[in-house]
Length: 258
Ligand code: HEC
Ligand code: HEC
Ligand code: HEC
Ligand code: HEC
Ligand code: HEC
Ligand code: HEC
Ligand code: HEC
Image (cartoon, rainbow, N blue to C red):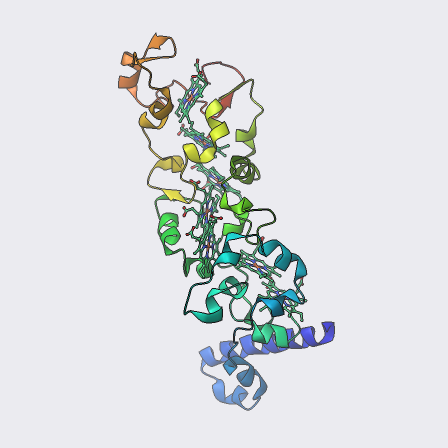
């Protein structure tokens, strides 16, 4: 199997060379080679999840429990079901015995466009002024979402621990531990951040004090905590204006000021 895989990789290599040469307008020199051309024109078709399961048992077992495994858009056929809804038609990949990049199989880690076929609204979110660099190719949906789902809906980010853990992989500073932690973080990073993208700097849900006042208004407002904030609120947001500049927690000040 290894041998044939390598063989196909070589052919794929020829295919790329072939396209490159076409672009240079030197088609006639290469057209006679025949083989790469045949490979280019063959279209992959959908084969169904059970076929993929033969070789990818791990992904198949995990996937059974995920939200996407329950999706079956009526009248759309195999292209909207199972593995191939994200990986594209797999017949050529299977016929060649599989392999990385073999048979035109899509790996959405490198290309989220396959996700946007159904989640087009997310593409818009990633185009907002402040966003995670997914469209720029610097990170992938899979950095935060487990595409196959190892437990029950872990990637749905419905358990808070999972949301924060996903973030700490890259944002270690916010993990703490802090001497004075901010309890708000226990409700998840998404209580304050829109993580696909936002029109506000730092991907905040709002860039003014409403962000904080959702939880910190009290009956005798503008008293917050034990002191009146009338003068402070006029100076700027709670987290700028030199006030609570440590919204994630602090090692130095119990009022999260630095
Ligand atoms: C919701 C979209 C989606 C579905 C459905 C899906 N996958 Fe994936 N798959 C992905 C993404 C995204 C990655 C990249 C993950 C990564 O790099 O962490 C991936 C990666 C893979 C890989 C490469 C793993 C590696 O370590 O390089 C294999 C193999 C795979 N998937 C097989 C399957 C099989 C088999 C099924 C069906 C049982 C399936 N996938 C269903 C999105 C999906
Ligand atoms: C005959 C066995 C076989 C079958 C059937 C098979 N694959 Fe694969 N596939 C492989 C092998 C081997 C690899 C390379 C794995 C590696 O190098 O880690 C692979 C790699 C992949 C990758 C990673 C590609 C990349 O470029 O990173 C994806 C995604 C994938 N397969 C999806 C599928 C899907 C979807 C199906 C069903 C349509 C399927 N495979 C059917 C053997 C198979
Ligand atoms: C064939 C259509 C389709 C494709 C392709 C697809 N999704 Fe989905 N996805 C859905 C549907 C339908 C739902 C469930 C309804 C909803 O929440 O929108 C869903 C739900 C989700 C959820 C919420 C999960 C949950 O448990 O609530 C996430 C996260 C997600 N998809 C991410 C992705 C990513 C990342 C990709 C690409 C690797 C992808 N999807 C590809 C159709 C698709
Ligand atoms: C930086 C981490 C991160 C990245 C990257 C990311 N997501 Fe999400 N996504 C989340 C979190 C966290 C939630 C839960 C949001 C919430 O609960 O407010 C979520 C929720 C979702 C949902 C379900 C809830 C909803 O808003 O409909 C879908 C669908 C989804 N993401 C798709 C995607 C797709 C597609 C990509 C890649 C193009 C992607 N995500 C990239 C973190 C991420
Ligand atoms: C794979 C790594 C990775 C993961 C996982 C990740 N991020 Fe990020 N995050 C980045 C990168 C890269 C940037 C962009 C930094 C830049 O543009 O300088 C960023 C930027 C941000 C910013 C804006 C920072 C600024 O200075 O403007 C916030 C807020 C943020 N991420 C929150 C989150 C949250 C919340 C999660 C979890 C849902 C998360 N991130 C998951 C890599 C990641
Ligand atoms: C209580 C609201 C709140 C919560 C919850 C929250 N953040 Fe923030 N975060 C902020 C504010 C406010 C800023 C902007 C600070 C500024 O602009 O000076 C920020 C900024 C950031 C930045 C940019 C760097 C910095 O410190 O300025 C990153 C990265 C970040 N947050 C990640 C996270 C992660 C990861 C989580 C979850 C563990 C999280 N945030 C939870 C309010 C919050
Ligand atoms: C999800 C709800 C929530 C949000 C949003 C939130 N907080 Fe908190 N915050 C809490 C809880 C709960 C506590 C601990 C109980 C208390 O002291 O009120 C706390 C404690 C604090 C404290 C320490 C209390 C003290 O005595 O000084 C400060 C300061 C604070 N928050 C500032 C902020 C700022 C600034 C923001 C906006 C960036 C914010 N909070 C957003 C829930 C929240």
